Image (cartoon, rainbow, N blue to C red; front, top):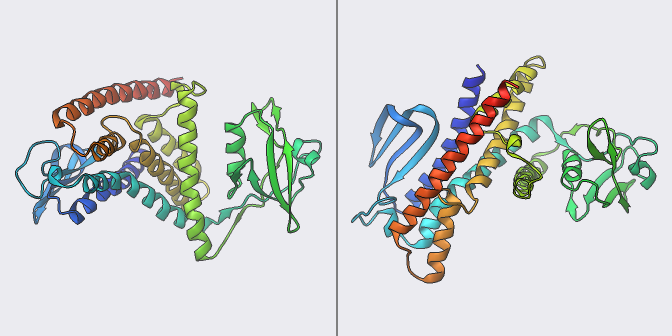
Length: 344
């Protein structure tokens, strides 16, 4: 059951990603030869117009195969015959649609479960927060220069700014206050903490507020992903902290198992939350300026726009091919690490 749920989530996210490429290709008059979900041999498929729609054997991955995308074509509707900004929009649409999916799913979870507002339930006596004058019922408005919209952003911010003195802005009975607060190190959790004890819980809101906060939700996941990548680059996170498909399937399975005791509504909401996380992550990762990823292709389009002429397609293809090999090796290493952690 865990694997089936994981396949459904992955398929939804990948389908939406490829749908972005597909729709912008159609809008820009590019011929789409095949639109598929999965990889490998075709299980089932059908033609509609010029496009072959198919379901492949391997349940991970997908593709929007366009005329003249990776080869020369004399067709006037070939991908390579379109302007640089048309090609840019088609490639960019994949990751952008992942952000759209995350936003749509965020509206569901925030509309049903409510918004976890950053209003403090109480503070620990003698803690940095209490000494600064923050009390139960106060709402955290800003940490440093970062506006705070969700309670969970507080712990994430302190994690990425461990040991730093932080300017905290909070609202008390309609008035705003600001103080420099240095979180104290907690031996038990191994984290720097302000001394907040929980929030007032999720608050149901009207449709307009849910729509607005859904943008904040997507922004939260994008920012968290980028900050995590930053820690990986600087060596503050290690390979052991990464998860590939195997690790993600395990996490989805563990979340599903733990949620069942609380009822199907909680299972549904937690799976939606996982889909938001994965979709936002896929969007960010695909926009990284690395060969073989959408972001790498966008870099070549930008260079082409600046130069006023296209780079040698063969050289560009070689760069992406080498990038793909490196990416596959990296994925094998991450997958091996996932498998190793299963037996630890």
